[in-house]
Image (cartoon, rainbow, N blue to C red):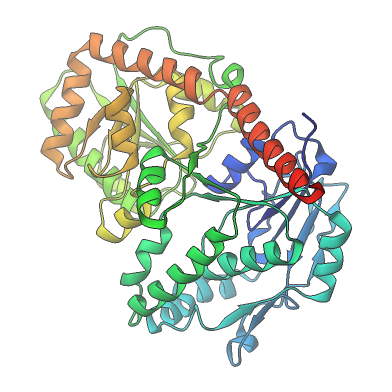
Length: 443
């Protein structure tokens, strides 16, 4: 089947965010001139990828309109096609003041969200310039993600204007966080829920990031969701695959990924656990944090090593060199509502590397369900040092367990997350949708 011409809404290609990584891995190998992206200006940065797609339209002040007096404070992004710096091979972005970014992200936006005005403070619209751009591109199908109210409304506006089949891919259950967001969170939850259902009704296909999300959303919204999680290049991620399950003179546990308040709390629980174990065991254990900024709190513990980010091409070998890979979640109620049906992009990357995985997450999350159903990780669901200590010791003391879960993880990654298989299924589904739409139009 030929590659459909796809318009992507609200998510640029990148190797940083979950939505961007999943997008990049699903569309890798697509015809480049058959892909175009439209999204808000604040989503573009130096990490935006051009190797898969280089046709970007930035939603600026002509489409994203802030109401007074916020119009005086918010950055005025230009509307139109993104300019590409051919020498640096990246997009030209607006230089941002660090102070301004800090004030907005840490003070102004949280305050507006708490007062309940952030969802009211701006509107999204199709400018005449954007309509011309959309008409000229003339896609066969629309692929959309959305993580906020404006993005949901924008999906509906574009689909109704182009009248082309649209597929929507949900990454996180962010709508369920709205009731606890600010003074009138309950009101905004009802408003956005109605708009979200309206958008889903315009879609020809619905995709989820996990199977538990698909089941829950079928019951909640009445639509069938196909599951597309982050696919992986088996040849790349398995090139340094771990083949031995013996432990050396020092046990190294690796965490690689983002930092946040909830994640840091879970990492500190592991640090407390290891400090206790290092007093009891003759074999020392260290927790390697492969993260950007070194957290201040790690100075309290003797068991932590800060590594910093490593080049992408080195990740498979770093994952395989560790004795265990740590995959923690946030245990706070608000975070649990957000991540309940999510699936970390690194889960499939961890699986194929052959290193035993330790999941530390709330029991009712899709991550825990997936790990327990398919036995690809040791799982601890109680947010307690003692519970984590027991789960870790079981993994340390049982070589057969380490081997068993590692082999299960590799097998599952090969069966369900092989990029070549997933991309073909994904492409076939979009192609069939276009064919069906063309058949209806010609009948």
